[in-house]
Length: 154
Image (cartoon, rainbow, N blue to C red; front, side, top):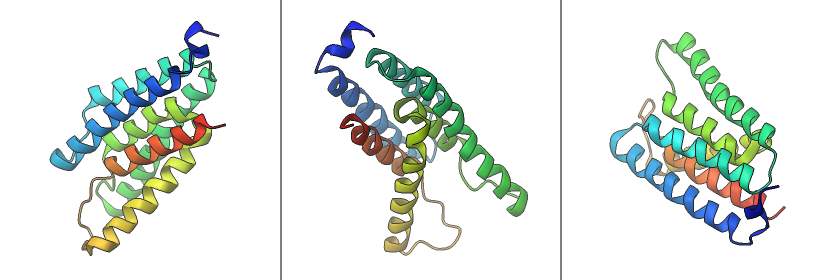
């Protein structure tokens, strides 16, 4: 186990790093309706580094990266086949994959559940019209952070 895992500040420094990166994702996705690949890569790399430094399960994190990406990419492929257009941006798939490095594969269903519930609630409260595009990245970012913080308490 790395020496930094014993530091009580380790998880909070990682949380600050994750919060800053996810805030950037949310702001950019709201403004530009896209999530830069470089930002997703930074989130994933930082997640793998934090996982290793905090002595967490690196294999579960790598599975989380693949599972997170493939879950959204698979749903989008089905939607495209049925509707002839994308239903979600691939930046969202990359973001969920990057968050898999932080929350492990078993945290991903909770991220999707919280993000989807929050996104649906906001769409309903705003009275969004059918087919109106609402950026999903901010909801995924917030949910990923919440799930990661919840995992710190276990």
